Amino acid sequence: MFAIYKKELRSYFINAIGYVFVGVFLAAAAILCCYTTLGSQSYDASSYFTMLIFAFIILIPLLTMKLFAEEKKLRTEQLLLTAPVSIWEMVLGKFLAAFTLFTGCVLVSCINFFPLYSYARAERAEATYSELHIGPVTAEIISCLIGIILLGAAFISIGLFVSSLTENQLAAAVVTVSIIFVMLILDMVNKYIDVYAIRFVISWICVLSRFSNFTNGMLEFSSILYYLSITGVFLMLTVRIYDKRRWG
Amino acid sequence: MFKIIWYNIISISIFKTKNKKGNLLIMIKIDHLVKNYGSNCAVDDISFEVGKGEIVGLLGPNGAGKSTTMNILTGYLSSTSGSVSVAGLNVLDNPLEAKKHIGYLPEQPPLYLDMTVEEYLIFNYELKGCKLNRTKHLEEICEVVKIKDVYKRVIKNLSKGYRQRVGIAQALIGSPEVIIFDEPTVGLDPKQIIEVRNLLRKLGRDHTVILSTHILQEVQAVCDRIVIINKGKIVADEKTENITRAVESSRRFNAKISGPQKEVLAMLRSQSGIVHVEALPQRDGDAYSYLIESDVGIDVRKSLFFALAEKRWPLIGLESMGMSLEDIFIAIVDQSSPKNRYERGKRTRNVKAEAEQEIAKSIMSNTSKSGSARFSALFDEDNNSKENDN
Image (cartoon, rainbow over all chains, first blue to last red; front, side):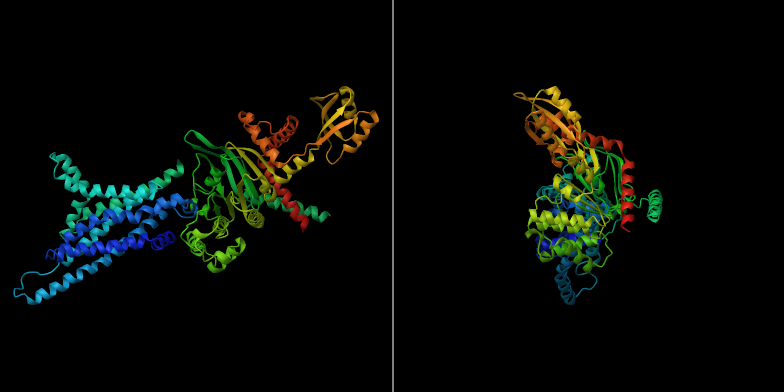
């Protein structure tokens, strides 16, 4: 598993894809951070995170599209499947490689909060009233970070699954983009549905409404479990795809 | 003398106990293997065994099921029914352990084009969880397959021949006991083909090798045993020597003799060294054609000429019906798929074709008759020869 993990991580940086991902991710994060906090004169980071999630529509497929599709096209999956490595190890190795790069980027993008904190310190020094909290809420930022990393894991596993279905990278990317897009947009569409039952069901599956708990600084168990189970289910489906192909 | 015989008896008995105990000698065992793709049957009830140190050639026309068999053997595909075990480990029940004993080169070498050869081999080394000394082991392999001069280059920029060799190097990592090559010489130039064949022969000394090919010279040059597959079925399974011998030892001639047919036939039958004579339906003026089969190791052509000269029956034509392995192969394949017979067209004349078919038949019937009996006989022979070497 470790060999596959290492190989995937390295292959991100042999190709341009890794650099493109890191570059676009950090640029998008910086711009969004400026726009949502500094630009609108607010210390509230929640809208920054929510907007960042929409950047994932483009970013996550960049990471996942080639993971299996390319192997299939070049017939290198034969190497992995005939090596003494189980399918779970192969899938996990690939997932963890993408996840590592993603998490790394998320953590690096925390630099964006430095100006917020330094502004807050300056403002606090000048403030005459001390009862009110001035500056970003650290606990909220941390819970958002946890939430966004979990959400990323779920999206990566979806992308991984789509990539295992096709040998065309572009097709994998397009399908992943549309799936993530629909999952995010569902929350907004939901408002216009009159039937309560449908609205209830959809609100249960839409990803964004779960995220709002994190933006309020809550680590709700059901939300964490929700993202983890999406991740688990799609990883399992990927394994099943490979299993099925062997038996087909 | 007595000593040698005594040793022989001992060695054979030791061999048998080993064989019973735990497949020390049978490295690959394929048992009633069936693979269906939907309604299409790719592999239909194949069983054979490969012993340690044997080089077996899997031969067959395109789409015969060679690659499928190999893919099942390496655990890439699963079988519909039947079992496959490598080094005594069932590939389905214990895939990870079994795969550790296999080095596999698929039809298309599985190369990551954007890696250098070095990176690729190191990745494979780690993937296979190899425990040998890395630098030394990789160096050895590079020396064997001669890729030292491209070691630092990106695989994308290598020629087909070098890519194939990198693929072979990949299969050798960890020095697995069983090496499986799917058409290893496709796309190589003649010099490289010879190099690869030499390599295979070298590997066969201490590895068990299965290779698939549709090039007959290759199996003849490299393999100890030939398994011919057609339409998912084994149609022949015979030691290469035996097939070659069968081809060479049948000394058949097509003779055209002008003279009264009945008397000529009687005379030919009375000739010493001639086993079988048959009048053929071809006629050229007053000359008739005969199929003559001589005894093994006797050249009847000269005596035949003089005998006919004595009777004043001119010998108008005498043609040896030497057959190549190729002819036998085609005959075997044709015979196993009678529907396609018309496809063959006018490739050979009837007589020759018949002769081929007869050899093909005998090889095929040998295969169906002898199963494990022939196999163990093979080992006894090996044991004997080894003992004699001592």
